[in-house]
Image 1 (cartoon, helix red, strand yellow):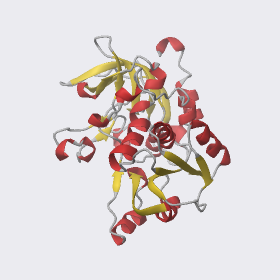
Image 2: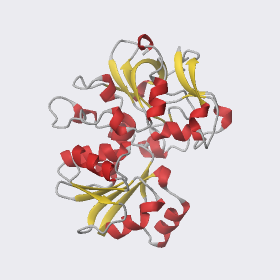
Image 3: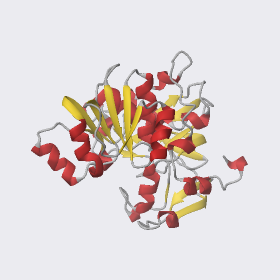
Length: 313
């Protein structure tokens, strides 16, 4: 089958390790199944893999891609949940399973004609969404949903600051937050990204580090150390900062300890949190304004994926 793989690690030129071509068919173990991929979405995680972040050379070559929508072996339209973990560990939260991984870290990912996944990782695709739209849900939207509503616990009328407009999780959080009745503020070093964020639903966009009109109820930290002090200054007493795990630098962890803060950080959401019903017909929520090309700016990699003739997709 055709697949896009990480064949080599190159921290300086990640696309140098990208290969397109034939790859062995998946061989699902007991409890797993094969999904025929109809659409997949790009994440920064794919670039990190090519740079060698979170993966060692002995695991290569490996098929890239965390997210997918397609059809299962019975012909059902499904969305693929990206986290591979043991739901019996850590009180049912697979993200706390020490052995958990994402597709494309230990198991071949979704940038292929077919992918093997645990059966429990399949969710029914909302009929209202195209395969391309549904493929954007698992990593970006589930992470944003969990950060906002599970960890930050925000409620309608609260103000949330999203650091780093333009990324996939940040874009999803803007859409979800606006639809949930939050006042959504974003920051960016790029004015154009700030304007795009307002088109997606943000009420205000500020330059990174700028003084805000008032303090906020919650901060979603998707940048890291560069915006960390600003996130602390922006927060109301008793407010919440939720950090994406990849951006938990040593200095941030030490800062948590010094200030006796409770770090609310996650790599990605877990299966029971998946808000799939939000995207069905009776819901007000739509992601149709947020296409993959808007969520993920890795156009060179997207061009490589699209080089395969259409009949193979």
